[in-house]
Amino acid sequence: MNQTANRSTRELNSWMPVDAATASLAAGAAAHGSAALPRAIKGAIAGLDGPAGLVLVFPSGRDAIPPGGGWAVPEGASVVGITGNGAIAATGSVEDGCAAIAFERSLAHGVGISRGAGGAQREAGRAAAAEALFTLEGEPDVLLLFLDPRSGDQSEAIAGAYEVVGASLPIAGGAAGGPGPAQIIGHRAVRDSVIAIALDSPGPLGIGTAHGCRAEAVPSTVTRSEGRLLVDLDGRPAATVYQEKLGYGEIELPDEAFERVAITHPVAQPELHGEARIRHVLRREGDALLCATHIPVDAAVEFMHEEPDDIIAASGTAVREALTPLGTRPARAALLFDCAGRKRAVAALLDEEVFGLTDAFPAPRPALAGLYTHGEIARVRRGAKGDLNHAIVVVALS
Image (cartoon, one colour):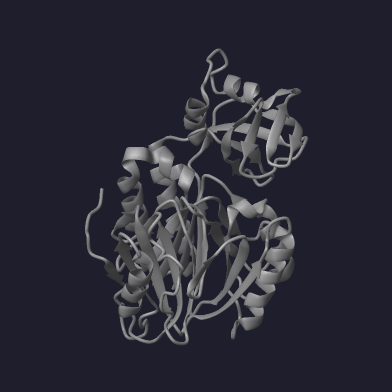
């Protein structure tokens, strides 16, 4: 295996080739309003020079997906995607609509799906990854995973996929979000599944990640946890310790106020390589903290903070990291998996974050599409882990 603020209302973002040696690979589009998904598919395909092979779609909002499905799938092409808490296109963020990116058939791909993932995430991740590799006519450069966050611990699905692809193949992707989280495959919406897409990129591929969080208190130790519930820290109720560490120890925070604090104050597990594994605090349940994923007993926990400026800067950092393996070659396509929590935290500066992200790509800018997820995925040469929170993941293809 290879190693590897709305400025415009235009709906189409076509990548323009640099020269004849770098012919069109992908084209992106965004559509707004009800039933936006089929219009975004059509717009993305219209920007290609040749027939479509793979179309990735990221609808957002209650009405972006036509009721009952049944949208047209181009002959010989695969349509795959997930819903988000907003979509990302070159023209800005899309609250109610759909972002899509279509790839020409020069990008070989294989798709796998495992249904009924609830309670068996690891097995579902293993099965979907195996099917994606089996159906790929080429050598994979990256495996994308599209998950349903309600199926269980996302780290289990990633671990299952890792058991199939091994350490040499990067894994990226995200989990569905929005008012009715769903996964898209073919001409229908599905749920409680793991979808895997294996890609064989014509040129170098890069993955970049960043979060923008910084520690602001002395770490604690997990002394009791149950599934995704963080029950005790340092032998005391986790919610109490969390508030004290953040300077709210003497304040009675109603649930709504507590969740507003949690949006900009995730916790983190320090990693041996010096980075922090950010864990989103979803809400308070009694005296416990419900986190996005399991944190084991005896783990160290840091208390983090992020500001809008940190989020904006991190987005540019992730783009530059993704572009580094490409060398002097321009990115011709990019996929963006940004955290829905980061979106809420950046608040009124969302447009600045989105355009800081897209503007970090040097001209000519690539076709791109992405979404705000309920969990981001990036596993690059760091073992079977790869489930991220409060992060942005950028996949750049040349």
